[in-house]
Length: 180
Image 1 (cartoon, rainbow, N blue to C red):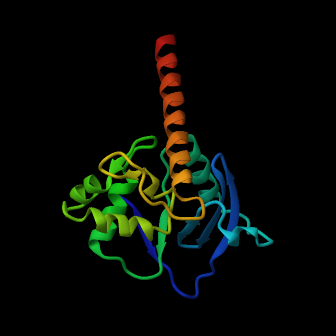
Image 2: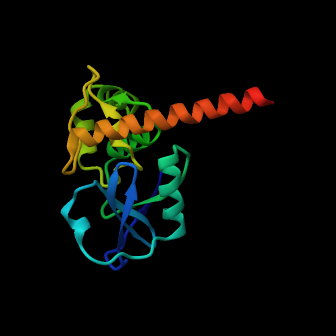
């Protein structure tokens, strides 16, 4: 279950540009939690100065790229609809290195006819990566729209990266179990 925090307009929002195996990302947070993650190539990332990352976010960032489980609180500027919240919950539950179709997300979220609605929700997801909208694909297996400057090529790269890390992690587990 995801944790939510309704951010007050008075809460200071800090930001930093973080490096990853899939480019640079602009991360914004407040004292209440994560406000947004913006994709590589976004022009706002070229601005000078960075705020010091809180430990919880630094650890979550590291764990994400290793394919490990982590927990953060997501900041909301305004309330979201129940269906949107359920879509975010389902999307966040898609395992690292795996995918699900828009229709599957819609069905599990309680509205099997809302695949396009899921697409709209994914398109406006401010917490890319941590609510992994890149893991949601078309029913035919095609990669559909992905935000940011790099779009579909970035989505493809993220999915490939995650599959490789997942395979590497599985191989390590197998080798460890064989040693016992």
